[in-house]
View 1 (tube, rainbow over the protein chains, first blue to last red):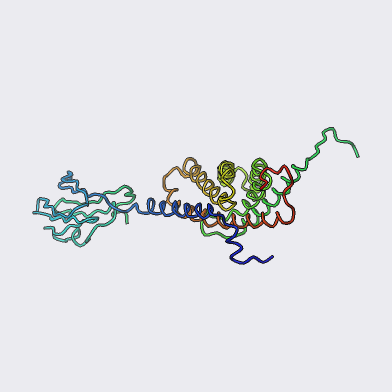
View 2: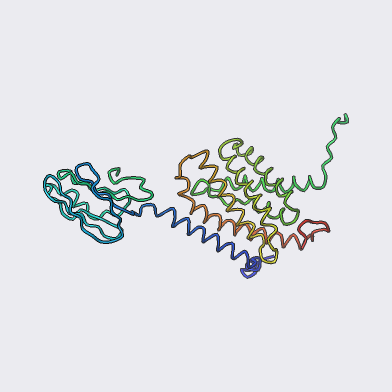
Length: 129
Length: 184
């Protein structure tokens, strides 16, 4: 009555293998589609409380944002963005470094500039931590 | 003994359904004792019985066995009419519909393993929809879909293999009689 591994394989029909592989494909697709919610697709730059620019994160560029203290320099790279330079005294937004998750926010309060990343599934902003 | 005014004479089919349902219920209760890492991920061993009944005795009997198993299993586990019961029921109904379609796939190519995996996907699909519409009205329930899908493939494959092997042994012990719906 003992069945060897080969016997178990004999119970599989060709279509069964296809169905199992199809199931794994569905798995992989669900994984990619559902577990990549944090990928950002754009950035919103605000100055003085007003939206100054909405940019995509597809190509590299540097944006200069004027504020009451001077110019805040925002650097956009594919898939990420950061505040490169800011005239504020404590440099919190610069020290935050690269923002890579949808919903992440860097705020340069003294210069009234903020940078936030948008995405399909921005469930939390970085102020929620 | 006082003769009963209502006489119920169970047919051979009735007895067969009861026997298979009993086996499925035992598996359901036994499975409830297995600790599982995630709620909702379980092997679904009782479906082995459904698959065997489907292959040997046809879809109608498989429906009876499966639904009796859901009903009696939930009564035994104290889940009757609890959310878990409706999840089981919706999963079982969707599986049965898919099994009813899948059994007509060419048998040369698609065996119990295919039936099992397809039914497992129908099961999680229906459960996710019911959970989304009723229990957790938030898209967050879909977050675990990859885990459920993987479980459907793995347990569907295992259950299907066990069912295929049982069918082979049964074939040896008692070849299906003439008139069996799925004779081949």
